[in-house]
Amino acid sequence: MVASGLHIWNPGEDGGSFTGQEEEVLEAIRICVEQGNDVNARNYRGETALHGLGFRGANIAVDYLVEMGANLTTLTEDGWSPLAFARGFSYTDFYKAQLHTAVRMEELMIARGLDTQGEEHFVPGSVCYDCLQTRADQIQAVATRDQWMEENFDPENMEIQMLPFWSWLPYPDPSQNSSVDVSSPRYQR
Image 1 (cartoon, rainbow, N blue to C red):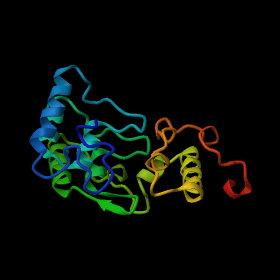
Image 2: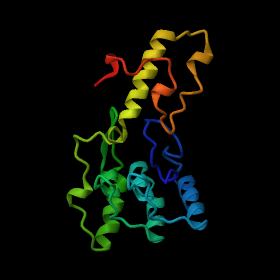
Image 3: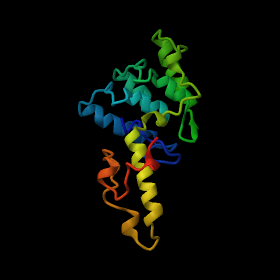
């Protein structure tokens, strides 16, 4: 899924997402499939490799996965198809669309007699996709970290800048990794 493009959110973030790297993307996906990985595997949000390719825009990899049995109509937990991802959506402060991949997915779907105009094939413009992934504990951890940094930051001290307990997976309880009192009214929402 990562090879296909899932969770490459930042503009310019690589992971094989630059134009001209489609062959590398295809090779990574091909290796995964040859090792027995399911082309329709879903992550915790219901996204598949085709959703990632809708976001990334590597048509040769779309063709390969569909040839290997990938389902063009699989929906995420939020109800969106890979085509919806390719047609575009907002995330953080950006909007991204891979219209060439949307056209290719439409061609493949039409050839199979599949609908391309249902609401599941369009992410509403009001949706900030990665914002949907933010949990309350993540927001709290960022607020705790930011307050601590404001109170303790020393540009000369690299250890303070990269504290080991700020490992962001699996988002530990900030009250367990900070001297900041998160029960303070300042942190209550």
